[in-house]
Length: 306
Image (cartoon, rainbow, N blue to C red; front, side, top):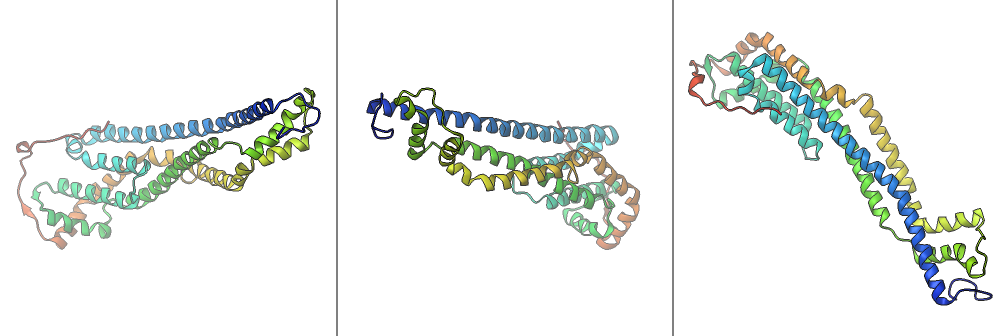
């Protein structure tokens, strides 16, 4: 025999080989079943969080559409692409796109500023160059009040935390998949054989290994897994920290749910200060050309939020 003692034995070399293979298969199966429970947990949590956040963003988009359609009607429908573009950027960022959220929010409020400036001064015709000049006064005039600054920081914190969390869950899931592909080494297989089936070859079917012996064999068989222990614990700690932030200062529901309310507040701020903003822009950019627009002559396209 190659593994078990060669003295008194009931096993042939072929039987020893089969028992060695069986002990290895049993160990790998039990290990995979144990790890599989953890993998399923990560799969479920990843899917649930992704569904939760996607639905949260979808509801926020729908709430904005419903509220603005009821409040602004045709004016909103003619310019709804400004808002659909914002939610599209937020969705793409969450899904992993390389997007600067602060720049994206800044672009949104700049586009909204230009559109509102045109609507509040609809008796004039504005060229692209004139609208560019209008945008240069945005930081100075603060037409939306402090809403852009506050909302931008809140959105950035919440979305960074949400994306980090779901990506972190996915990393854990993928690491577990790799670990499940690891097979026990030949040294582990021999140790398992000696501990479990070698006593059988001597007729000792009911003999069980002592606790310390069993622990030592498991340490040897799980040596590669043990090397991941410290890093895995650090990963779990980091993941829990992000989860705590999502429930606390970076609460995603408290940020995403009222986005439409915050944007509406910004619009009302501009409506209140509209004449002052317009006069200062006219002073800086010059008096625009007076020309009444005929909206009936233009084909209107609608970008409806769903």
